Length: 170
Image (cartoon, rainbow, N blue to C red; front, side):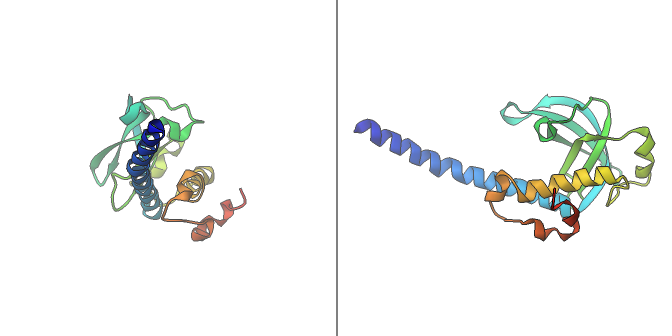
């Protein structure tokens, strides 16, 4: 009987401590994703280093320029499992135009010389390459409306993003 009480006590402590942390972490992540999407600017980022972040996660450290200011950030390599990024190469970065430190490097969207001319004047609000824009749009639609994030507020439905209707059936 004493062991049962201990188990219940530790389970209660676990729930009391970790559930709010998971809730706040998910809320923060969703807020970041939504602000990146709603204030979207697209530019070139330079993947300069592979490293480990908190809890041992592998991450790609990158930098990009915004209004002559160099911004450094990192993206988890697990975010884009289907990619094989190469250190020293350029990739597409989507960032929040109001808070540029909120950004995501798309390690599955390399910037080759043939498309770098699109970024000569700075950032873009939309990618001129349809396949790249579709990858960006589907990333945000999926992260905001499906999966683990869908169980936590704010709750978004695909109908909240009418401009992405072309992705609803996919």
